[in-house]
Image 1: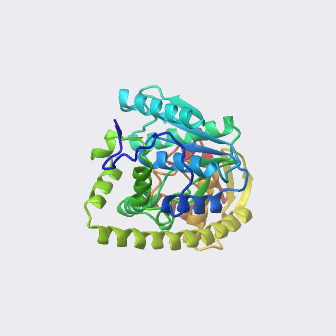
Image 2 (image 1 turned 90 degrees about the vertical axis):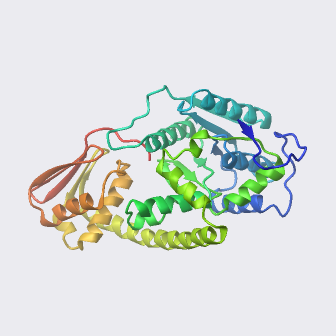
Image 3 (image 1 turned 30 degrees about the horizontal axis):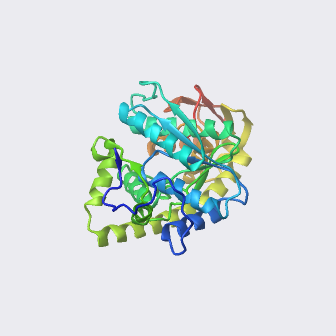
Length: 359
């Protein structure tokens, strides 16, 4: 249902765009994020679920846009159809909001049962993949190069805790990046990532912005929901310190990964002998001059560059692959995501057996 959750009505029309007020921590933070991530005149596709965070971003952009944004703004909403009429009402709400704000809106509804959930996957991950696939298509169809999502500091904390609990490596400790390439020519940016959830909710309350509540967030069906509920029950002084410490860890891991990625690109440039969209051939001799951890990171970097599915790859599998490259002994393996590897005549051939999709 529509809610202002613990907010008193301000008396403003919920869809009215008010002049930007000086001293608004949310708008100041949003502008800072846009300044870092958006070039002057760039158009933006805004991912809006109808929840409080994305509605704050949309209304904030509408306020800022009257003064400083010259590029086109459009909205995209994917109706997964997982919550029946509630999902349909979310979509209608987003469309009505966009109509009132004078913003173009693209909505797509998935056919029930169409989410690709394999035997080791999760519904949550399948929904996430479908959402980014839709956003990539929407951005390309509208000729927009930027997709904005409403991830914030709390999302970063939840992601880092989730990654640590499942046994992540250094890349997982980097958490959610402020920007990344989704498909060639299209970037996902997160201008609210450094904003606290409290700052966002204050803006929603003070502006009287209506939003939708996702009933599935209150369940413990998904691991991330369980983490969120534990963090919410943690005393503020502890949770605030945890968020700050994890953000510092994320920043340090991100800087380290940037250096490792540069090294990985150099390793691959010397080792790749042939490359196509679905196949890469590497010279094992060119790889053996590097220690195993460097080869492993280069292979992970290659997976990311090729946009091959890697969520189900674990440390043992990456080590098996890197050791195969080091030894150069003939062998063949099949890895999660439909990737086969074959070592023959000291050449490591990696082949994608089925089409991959944006992560």
